[in-house]
Image (cartoon, rainbow, N blue to C red; front, side, top):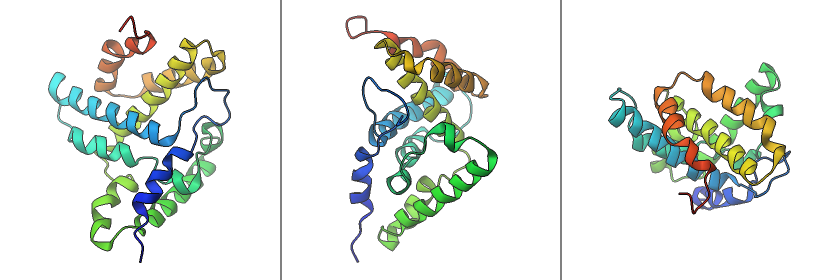
Length: 191
């Protein structure tokens, strides 16, 4: 039996995000997953170290974020307007993601499967809110960077994503947005 899990993960770089939008620069799910991992780790640390609140281990948040879109290796990236069009489609797509996640886990040596299961299947209820916030934050940062490049195609997505971020009950996300988000609008000389 070949253990194809890691080779399949390497194919994340071929899955492009924002397929329905005109992009100034493309983004794939490998790049996105890295950014979400960095942001999830930061949000976990902010929660624990700055706000002094209990919460999940920041390192577990980062690892979960690395794998949060792994099922898209097999499913592709379904555009948000379709994925969330109605509850039936959202539920069906969650089932497809779970099946794809199970298929990925089957590509691991049996001794490693349990170690990856909660990450690939997004089963850790403590970590999930941090990863979801980081995922949405990453989408908003993409919008900000596209707008910075003069791409008005992302104006509506930016408004909708910002509203979704503001609706989350996440003190660590609020702190990040107040203290760190503005820097994403700066150019290299301004940083």
